[in-house]
Length: 372
Ligand code: GCO
Image 1 (cartoon, protein in one colour):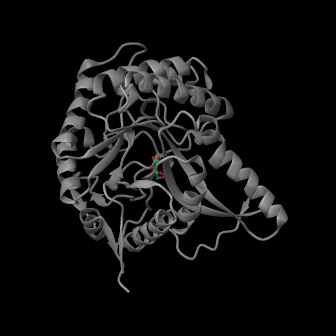
Image 2 (cartoon, helix red, strand yellow; image 1 turned 90 degrees about the horizontal axis):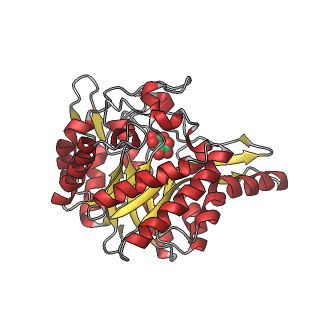
């Protein structure tokens, strides 16, 4: 069976600065990593120095889009002091992608903060709104001709209540600013990590799911739905909920991190996001799978669900696999392997996994071939 995707569908992969670049010495995770984490990331994948080689691989793998983040702490290591050399670095990164005909999606904030802002309380401090807007405006001024899709914040719902509400204001401010100065052809979105919540059995379970869906999946979007040009969806898991908040997953198949592999869950989230009437990009989806035993199956099943949703009228315009390469997985360190490309952390040698070539064929032909 062959499932064709819409014309101009984006096929790519995603990374984040702190997880792949290396030597982000002004970031909070590098200077003061959370107690329960395996931080700091240190040299990571040395992508900072190897991005040309990495983009060659991305091109060989027939991807036509790439999502990455700018490390705020690199470009503004001291409050209000922007670093010209680091701004030049990201210009080189963007130009390198453009030379290869790759569409660029840039995330302005992907979990890490400059240490100077972290010391002020990060996004739980309402002054962060101003700081973020100043940083975003600087990036916009420098790169507006090189970025095809801007995303403000990655996964805002992982922050505290205060943080979430300051992030809502920060997103809105930046959206209005970019739209005002973008002469009409700027695309600015948000990146949400939605979970497919499913009631385990009874009415009480359904009530728990209603609450979780409202808070985790809908709250932020409801607040910013008029200040976003598209929705970025990060999808990893289904949680089957037993009142009040117990998880009772079947776990027929799990990733190396024990996350249930339930690809059909993305279909339900995509159908639910249709109510916002915005274009949708799947900005992260993948699994920790060091032996590459489930990755091809998982990507195939996910894309079948995505194709079903498109057939039913959901305006989905792209898919970014998480991640282009193995990288620093926050509290879990370097153990989990999410990459299409395997990284040998001793030699930093890159090697595409077999599943990367399956995905490459899908990208090249804009279609999914399913062996019957
Ligand atoms: C997240 C982040 C990524 C993770 C990925 C796998 O969603 O936590 O966007 O940085 O590495 O999702 O957990």
